[in-house]
Length: 119
Image (cartoon, rainbow, N blue to C red; front, top):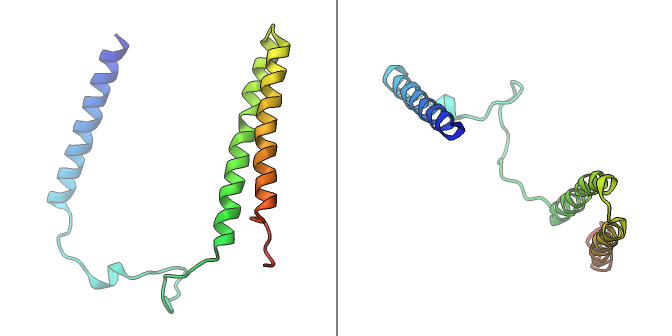
């Protein structure tokens, strides 16, 4: 029953989306104005190129933040499962294993000098 209601909803959503896109293409404006494609922000005309190179250290820092942040997010489900678990030793060993993996990754980041900004 749930699959049938989902299928009906999916078909109605796709049909409505296709219908609205079709009506928009039929009734919408056909002419393109050159000025429409210009960059416009805060009433200031663009100056220079929009392509700008950033230093790789910004990307490395962002990726490392995401890596460690996502790994830390896994600790909340572990903490909730720990409260309900009957085998506390297994849960603690899983936690220690996870923290060792994080520590190895952190030591690798420190040794590779990925967070050194002055060099």
